[in-house]
Image (cartoon, rainbow over all chains, first blue to last red; front, top):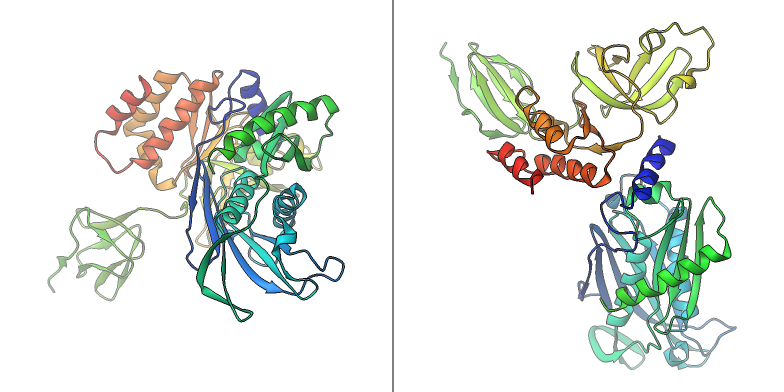
Amino acid sequence: MKTEQKEHILDILDKGSRFDGRKFDEMRPVEVTYDISPNAEGSALVKIGNTEVMAGVKMSIEQPYPDTPENGNLSVNVELLPLSNPSFEPGPPSIDAIELARVIDRGIRESGCIDVKSLCIEPGKKVWTVFVDVCSINDDGNLKDAASLAAIAAIKNARFPEVVDGEVNYKKKTDKSVPLNGVPIEVTIVKLGNHFLVDPCPEEENVAEARLTLASLEDGTLCALQKGGQQPLTTEQIDKMIELSVTKAAELRSKL
Amino acid sequence: MSSEIIAKEKDIVVPGEVLAVGMDFLPSNGTYRNGDKIMASTVGLVNIKGKVIKLIPLRGKYNPKVGDTVIGKVSDILFSGWKVDIGCTNDAVLPLQEASSDYIQRGADLTMYFDLGDYITCKITNVTSQKLIDISANGPGLRKLGTGRLMNVSCNKVPRIIGKQGSMVNTIKEHTGSKIIVGQNGVVWVKNEDPVKELLTAQAIKMIEDNAHTPGLTDKVTSFLSR
């Protein structure tokens, strides 16, 4: 059926419409809610259409890695909960969950948006580690964009907990937020036939020939890429996708 | 011994609720007899017709009935037929002789007729007490479905989508010019050359599913479609 389903979706695209009636470069309504969890240092809930993703930030004081004694650490974990999609299974993280976590991690890490030097308390002994946990609540397509938006929103929302005599008091938050140099936004572009689509719905995602996730900063600097899908992409196609993703990233950034 | 009905018509009941006491009444779909009581086995609306008490389930998996036309997905190819997923607890079996009106040679490549993942409209020919289901794809209107939009709706809402003698589905067909096939198992196939009209058709079906319990549904659908 996959081929017939694809034929049908391609036919709709060739007639200038999309499976759910949107324009090719039109996103579903995006909604960001902050402070959804009082126990986390920072949290956010992102809705793109019916897709819902929750992210939380916890911070703790840990020993730095020996090769980077003056740098704080970032750790991103994604859980695709079985309640969000019938095909998600409980148990150890699936390949998709690991990929998603790595893509989000790369977008934040390689953009250099978190000033890791400022997370250092005592070189070689004590640094802050930022844990970002992302949970899918409902998967109605385009989990990648929603998850990365939720992750960066939660980091923006995070406040350092109080430290008393080297012990962290999680009950009380300070006014200090995580120092950010920019806001990387990830946008996934899907290729189907000769068309490039943003914010794919599940039907389009299932039959996509190729997808490219691009993280970009305010000034259009690309900081991370992830290619998926069966078909190769030409440089012209990638150029087109970059252009589209940067404009869409600006749109998403305004929702934060 | 005296008999009395405890539940009223159109009451919503939960499993284990006593609907009637006494031997004068007969349990039907969704109910069972326990001693001299008739009890509910699903969540549903009570429907009393003379002496027969039955429940109209509010949700739940499709319960196969002989003679139902359903839309299924080929899930496995066997030596002498196909396994078809029709949304029941068990897969249905489509035997070789029921697949097509032409003669199929022994050892022929069965994927030529139906391949894995194909959607077909078929009729249920037999359901055993163990819920083993036999289906047939040989009959008027039964075929492999081509390209089109597939939707899953709750099988309990299918009667509302079809309407009295197909009135609802005919209203949608008239307004949009779409081709619609509704399977009793809640799978709906929609096709229209115009993607905008196809989407409108799908939205109308979704609307019927969401508002299945409200009165005046045909008027609502008509006004939605002529907007």
